Image (cartoon, rainbow, N blue to C red; front, side, top):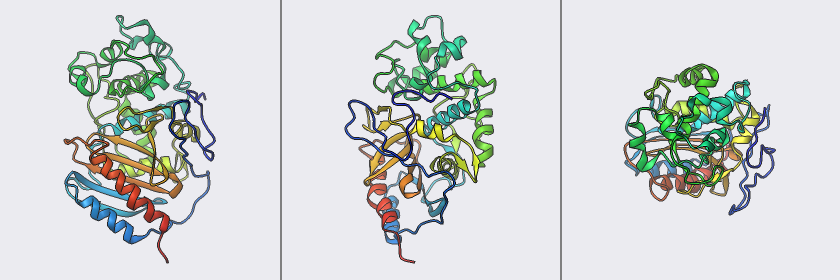
Amino acid sequence: MALGGSGGPADPLRRLVIGAGAAAPIALLMPRAGLASAARPFDRAGLDRALARAARFDQIHGLIVARDGEMVVREAFRGPGLGRPVNVKSVSKTIVASLVGAAIDRGVLRGPEQRLAEIAPDLIPRNADPRVRDITLAQLLTMQAGLERTSGPNYGRWVESRNWVAFALSRPFVAEPGGGMLYSTGSYHVLGAVLAQAAGRSLLALARDWLGDPLGIEFRPWTRDPQGFYLGGNNMVLSPEDLFRFGEMWRNGGLRDGRRVLSAAWIEASWMPRTRSPFSGDQYGYGWFLAEMGGRPVAYARGYGGQMLYLVPTLGLTVVVSSDPTRPARSEGYVGDLEAILAEEIIPAAERGAPG
């Protein structure tokens, strides 16, 4: 199983260092296989402060905070309950990236360096730039394909097109493949279509089989394009409790109740910094943003409106936030406020613990 790309997979217990141009290295520590312990205590006063701060935001719907798999906060402020499926927006990208890893684990795909022309040549439109044939899975996973974005101001035109895959792949190159990150849901939609073609099954069927069954998550049908491909990278419907189970599997190195869901090699490869978001400045691996918050390395998934899944592996933390999906949530605005609660209240509360 090839898990290459810039830097390749790393020992999860050493510092992961991004290449040239990085402002600072980032470390992400995965738990060693087979190690388990009772949930460590929290400073309750710190959690209460976190809850009080979160409650001030009318955009927030729900909050889950768990340590070592045990929920210590389970609060529904407003909106749908924590067990009710909601649109997780671009957290869907992290799900699709996980399905790519599952496909590699099963031999459906050979590895991230496979080219589109090798896997799904029928998806490449005739009018596409010849360089499209050489775009790799890794470049789609990191949104470094170099093609003009289909997100932002181009999103409406894209989803109104007759063929979403062809539209995404016929965009002009605005950067060299492997260059800077160009945040684009089209890249992940192409990934989803490639997965479906390679496996001979729909993205929904793969999600149900490879993630839903072992995690106890019910994947429901969501948006499909005119050719019938499920939208890769947006509009999946999952509850905050579903995201908690998904996050716990990742925090535990790909395991769920002792059952292997994703390989440790894919976890490592996904949490290797490979590029950087031009919006938040945070680093990005395969479907995960990577940052330091409260002095701790954090991997997080992010969706429009403030649908968030934060993992702090060194403290055993999994934090889920659900929010109003109709309102923007910028890094310097609402999402920044959520990160401040994590960095200033939740992480210190976990570090301090509580007596007895």
